[in-house]
Length: 304
Image (cartoon, rainbow, N blue to C red; front, top):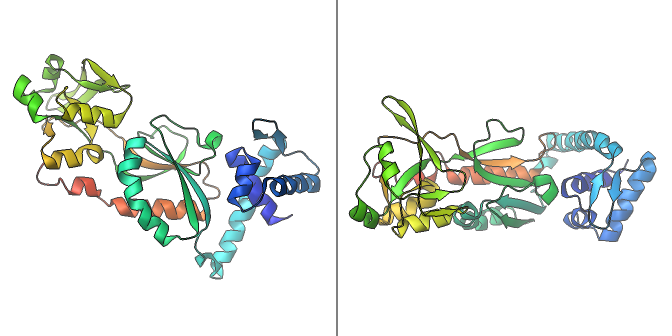
């Protein structure tokens, strides 16, 4: 069985696109299609459903996939055992990430990553919607969420500390709330899905449903509207640390921390075969952010 054919089959299973999978491996669409055909001919079964819009695995293809991954994982382990695994990863890495985090914390460190791995190229897809990795053909997704009940394979890159902020202008006009329940008397800028905030208090957890005239599904818009004095908002420190340093935002309700188990996660489709390009991406960016992450370290002792 041809190993290159198996590599292509695995990429087709991930991308649902023969042309894209072939391109990642340096193959033309015609050659990629021929290779899949040869693999099917050798096995005597159809592995892929082909339509004009996309491809998907047949029942036999689904059954073959874990075995193909095991074969390639074994080969990679064998190469590593004799020193051949030191070759730098190459190819194309498709990454999806939240737009705000991607712009602020992926792009600025991308130059260093690409200089370390000159044979890698990166496709970045920024969206605040949850993107299906398999459907979109992505190798890895960055997510800021609570994944404790998720069945996905993930590695934590950094904590996602969330705080309550307001601008000095807003506080001068409307006063500063001293307890969580006082938020009910203030304009709050709500991120869709986060209208209810849970605080730790000396008497236990308290839930506050906030209200306001501005709602959005975009984290940077929440931050910018808050800095413009439109209301109080909950934001991640990775998003607002520069505004806090410049005095454009002020942290409030410090004695009542928000209850949150969110973090910055690197999520990938399969643990059976962690591609070298995915592994080096996770290791590099996890190391870049640090523990504590650099955005919290900048604020340590002065604000947080």
